[in-house]
Amino acid sequence: MHRNLQTLATLLGQILTARHSYGDAMERTRRRFPMQLAAEIIWTQLPPLTFATDHATVAAILEPAYDVGGDAFDYAGNGDTLHVALIDAAGHGIEASTLTALALSAYRNARRCLDLADSYRSVDKWVNAQHPGSFVTVILAELDTTTGLYREISAGHPGELLLRNGSCIAELQAPTAMPLGLGDLADPIPAVAELTLDTGDQLLLYTDGVVEARTDAGDLFGVQRLAEFVIRALADQLPAAETMRRLVHAILAHQHERLQDDATAVLLEWNSAPVPAAAGPYVLNTNSRPATQPRPSTDLWR
Image 1: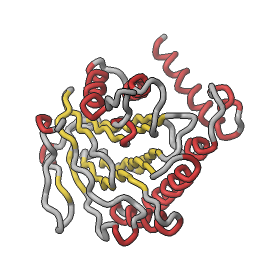
Image 2: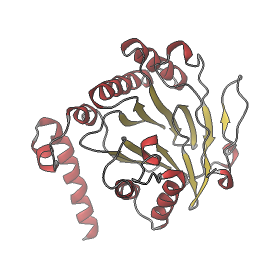
Image 3: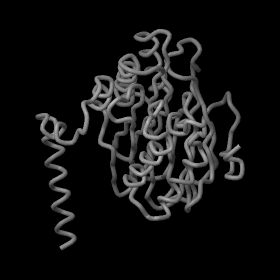
């Protein structure tokens, strides 16, 4: 019986998703409030909040849902490679959302024919040309789902949190490159960081709006509270999507339901069997920068 219900729910979800683009009935039904135009621009371009295969899982959140401006996320599974991006444009409102939309489209255009470093340079070129004086912080990443090799460029974003066996063992180095749109100030050859994951590892990507959410008294949500919340949720064996849904509510509750900035996060999990021979430190793939290992958990909260 349970299996039949699960199959029925899957089929219903596929039907609703397929029909979603052909009319507005679903959007009218699901929305509790009118959506601001800045948010409409972003949400029409985003992929679904959850994606899962036998090898990897992606779950994302983006708040405030009805008035978001400069944040966005993206992912795409292409063969054995899972591409993931997190975008945060400077500013708020329509200007920020149009800048984010440009960066998102430029990234998708670039990743379909260029490698990670060249994708960074291509998006930087378009942002600088179309929105001079503005900038966008991003994480551009890709995961080899057969080996667990994670490669990323962190351009002005906080470093991802590496979660393993119920603990936060490291905060990855950041940034490895300048924010996009700074033109001649940007690195001509951005550093690409590499990390080989163990099976079951999770990476939490987030924008500064998550950790900088604050109470009226100025108490920040912070990196430590973020990591502890996600670790507790994972310890309760909650699905990734439910973990992120609860994280949204925790951030909103901390700030009394009034976010001062967009808050976006992506939880990425690798599920394939480990490859011992490929295990290694977190390094920067560039001749001009020293190799760097992740900071241990004892140094995470400084």
